[in-house]
Length: 127
Image (cartoon, rainbow, N blue to C red; front, side, top):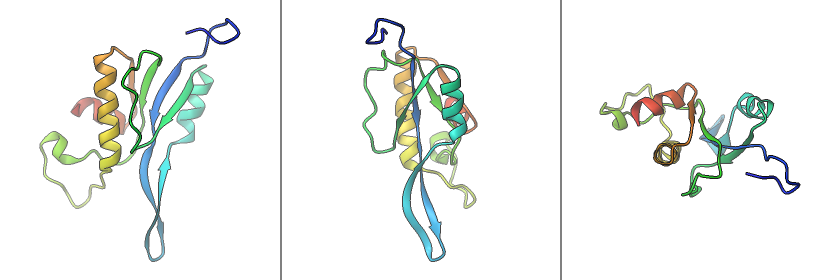
């Protein structure tokens, strides 16, 4: 991929953010999208450009313009996805699961490198 000035562009890396809720004294508050800043800093430090994708976004069909997919840490994977019953101590994020499993399926189909961290490694194992 060439940059507009004719040089090499820095590779884009897809990074899904996690859906969560801000907790307030009287219960759940506003919906949030979050991503650990350390992931962004590490990617940028390696010369990569993170492109954030949020749950609810339609992930790109064609990943050929991307250098990789980072599946970050986050909430629990939905237990039904690996044949288990829900446990009261788990706190899954169905929106994040839908997005990340979709991205993982596309990345694998198109031969895109994938790095899983914590939850992301669980996704690789389940998917």
